[in-house]
Length: 216
Image 1 (cartoon, helix red, strand yellow):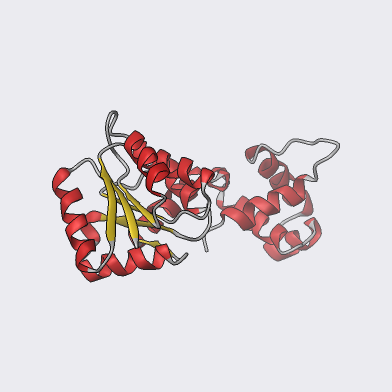
Image 2: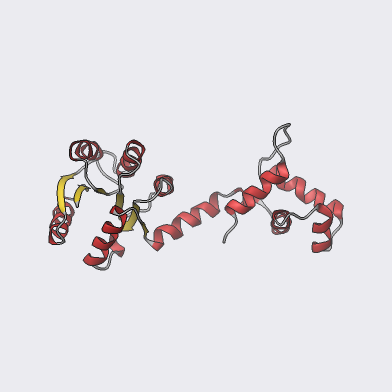
């Protein structure tokens, strides 16, 4: 398998190259920054890319942004992110581009064979994500969800709305008046920024938000 590595630490670049050679994989290029990564992929057409997140010049999210650009240009290109950081802004975007994607944390890779196995699974079109990455992304998703604006009672109401219940049925289930339910529903629409328009059904949109963002 032909591999391009993007990693600003020279020791880690060399180390990864030696590890992959032991398992009969060829590192066709090992670069230190995002422009070098783009150039190496264009020149060598590798079977997979292994990239860090933070690289020169800014040491922010250059590697992950480069990975997204590469996937946009070549959706079939497998990419394994290997980093110390969970860059939440773009990690979920990368993971939603389809199969052949991985995200591992350097300090949580316990064995060389485990890393190589992950690399090979991603190259074969699989998805490999460190559980800690999943935990942090889900935590951010909950924090960013508009459902967090709702009171406990409003969450009960929208959960029943998601079951397809009418205002009257919700009132009976919660043992409150229908007028109280109507008030809660109006508050839910406001907090979810769902305003009355000719084209949108606010109740349906509220339910979609509930089904999409509610913790599983």
